[in-house]
Image (tube, rainbow, N blue to C red; front, side, top):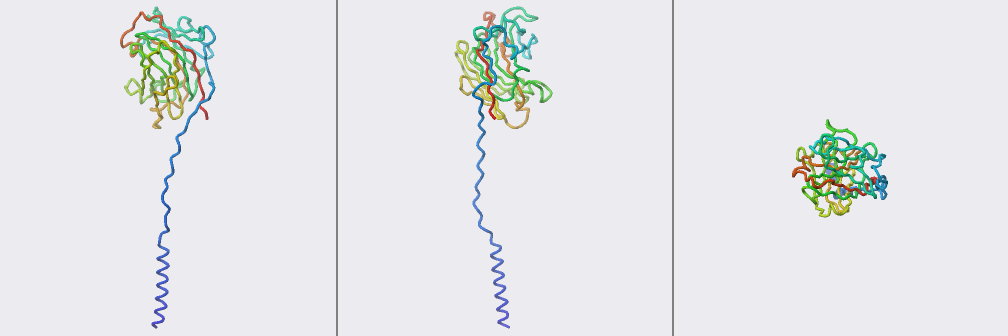
Length: 287
């Protein structure tokens, strides 16, 4: 009987030992976190996909440019009347486009000027824009190189819901301070939330400079003569902050007065006032 108990006890001991071994967890490998993906690097075509060198004298090329016309104040209480196909206000000579503001009666306004746009002719989604220009001096003027949406896809208002990219703005009463701004539903000057950067350029009116904007799905960046001075990132929080996934077009204009440009009044001795553009070049975003 004792031997039988001993045998059963041995079986029990073996079973217990086997269970004990089965329940012992296998050694775990140390946790190695997955490294984050490297940030995407965006590049642009080496050659422009569209360019206007302004080498044909006369009016701006109507294959590329149309005109915004009128003296409505343009949402900013501006003082000029924008004309259409008027050589006094927009003409090409010696490879330079001149947008000229003049002190003269025009419509119900006392000043004339021009605002030319590529809407419907050179609309694009993403890319790099280069504009070589000489900015006019003078209190009361407000030249701009900028972009607007070519359609209304977001919200209930064309502006600011569909976005504006200001490649360059300058107000004459604050000479040498160059502005780059972004306007969207969430970020705009009406509610004082616009995203803006400034830099100084003391020879803005005596020398030509290259104003560059890079636009990708992730960011908008601005440069002067190749020097970065503004970056606006896509937050991923929706169109209210980033409506910049639809086509836009380029605008060139010289406004007079207005809520911003006219804050210190207008010096009538500056006229005719000339905004000079050497070229506009558009480079594609590479796949």
